[in-house]
Length: 456
Ligand code: TYD
Ligand code: MG
Image 1 (cartoon, rainbow, N blue to C red):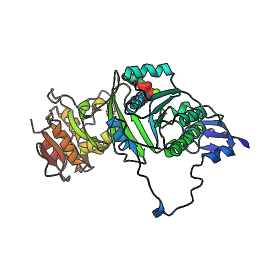
Image 2: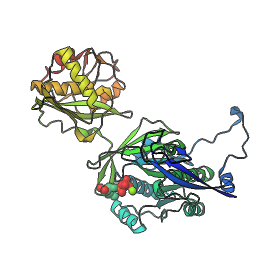
Image 3: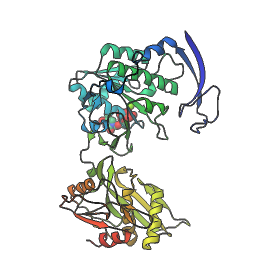
Image 4: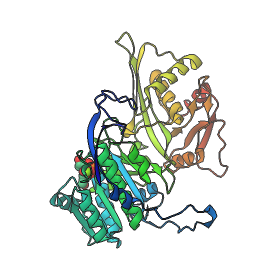
């Protein structure tokens, strides 16, 4: 028996009510409710339960088959996945439109099928010839890559069952729809239903499925948060559309850790892996250094990355001076300016301050504090920071330099890229075996200025 039910669903967060509401009580969005009509077919929901017959078991009696992974043959992608794709898992790749999701997955589909895996790439957004053109541009033409242009979930399911591929790629979850749900493709109920069916296929037939999802203007994955809860792995593909580098970041992984990132560069013929990412974000070490420019060592996932930070300080023409930060938090820059004024007497209350991270990187960790402070100070005093010195350290409110994580890896990365000195917090213990780079330990800001700004 089919039952027809009507409900109003918030398109931002998935909150459901029986009647229309102007503002969502869950997430606060205005005008986000849309009426959705659901046909509940009892038989269908029954056939979807895969663990129907399994009674509760003692944990000690459960036997496990160790998870089987296969490599995508793209090492930066494997790294983020925790070592490859786990069979029977569902992976969501989310990112802004135009960031390169389809490109990445067509390339991975290509490398995987060249290594003998059967890959079914289902495009709900592009036609077969559009995909063929992209594949030609990417140089992808293996025998085992099947392309299927389809938006209907039931037909997709039928093809997966008939073709039995090792990997299915769905491009994108917002563009497919199920006949059982009457609302349009991309609505919360459709996304939830389609994702549920895909998860059941993956778990039931041990097929890995990668689902592409677009993110909204606010940076959330379009549709309900519930999508993130349902899948095994959520990977965010980010970067500035106008810059060439892209970062693949795992935000949830049931089969691996979430501290890894993969770095790519978008080129004429597809995405290229960047194995030495620091090279992207610092300038040629032998070029001329200017006041206000310093190099810091930041952490991207568990990987150290050298990044150049620039500051510009100048007399303000405005009643309230401007503080503009690109790539670092403006609030953090305000705090650093306050500490600089109070603890070392650097008063910039009549100066505009601009801070910029080169290469479009976004730095969220506080270990960049000391670098930002030294960039601002060197520009304000018109002195040049030694270009072979890298900086790392968090600044406390009393001007003390506080310890940061992963110090050994950061020092080794700086040394590898030709830096001769590194300024680090005094309280960070350093592995004694590290050599070939002078380590300058500083206790507070004044100490950092005395030891760090004197070298030529
Ligand atoms: P695409 O993979 O279509 O993005 P998404 O699926 O995330 O929406 O890639 C979009 C952009 O990538 C497009 O604007 C052009 C660029 N691009 C390249 O620079 N080089 C290439 O080889 C390809 C295929 C795309
Ligand atoms: Mg696309």
